[in-house]
Length: 409
Image (cartoon, rainbow, N blue to C red; front, side):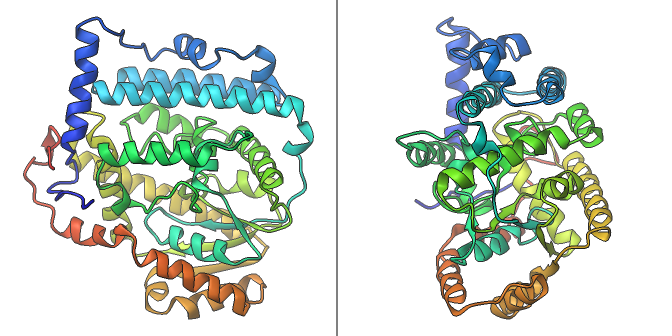
């Protein structure tokens, strides 16, 4: 199914409009109550069926307190700053209660199998760089090597192991719904339920701001997140990675990790995996900025009726500069294997660029790896994200730079 034209960064689909109206009608008619975005209420819903021991589990007292503090601050920002419409309010409620539920479920799992949270794993390969700088392409090429492993999208979205494992099915359903609400989703990022993808779900599950600041205007929470110690978030991240590797049976293979948020908190990640190899993606700043703004605007458009393109550009110019500065500072002190990847060079001759990367991080590039990467390239060539550049070039400013999002399709 082809996506409708997207005339403006803040364009939103008719399906999103209808969903928002339906939610509002349910509230207005008293058929269901508007759920308050308050920590106590969300906790009651998300923790239902679990115990306090599941919350604490093998986590330190500081880690438990960090999550509670983040929840309170995020709720305050959502209520005071985000200006959510009914659909946005519903999505925030769903994401936060899910984060609480999954945190308890992980805690219960680790109470029964604490050894998995500390399972031995091969040193990972970390792809670090700004979003929209080619990190997904690099990530999937490296993970295609049969000697490496990658995280499935469904495992990032829901890290709790289950038997039978229905996560691929549930994620496929979730993606289908997401594509109805945002028909341009795959133009922004090519998704697949079992496809290798970034570990953003593991970070947002600890209430890091990375997924939330790309959906909602929550400046106080973003500022808090940037200024706070990220070690509690990455302690949970490391436990999830070790558990996932053990359960998936690929602990002996280097896991290729990727998330743009790593650029902001690289010291906390390196502290957990000091022997990691680093692969750093670079792209022209202006191209990264415009592509980032397009992606974020697309996620914000259906969750708030307030649209300010100038403000969004300014915020993401600031955010990208902060990540760049922090990433450069962290890598300047990194003594382990490191390779840089230029976005343009990767596009011109990806095999030569990958060969250079492998040489720099000290891994032989095998014929089997190249064959698998060519398969990944063939698959990627069919992805819809190639239309994003044309989409951005074709934006017409029908809705103005401020005002309500534009309905399209």
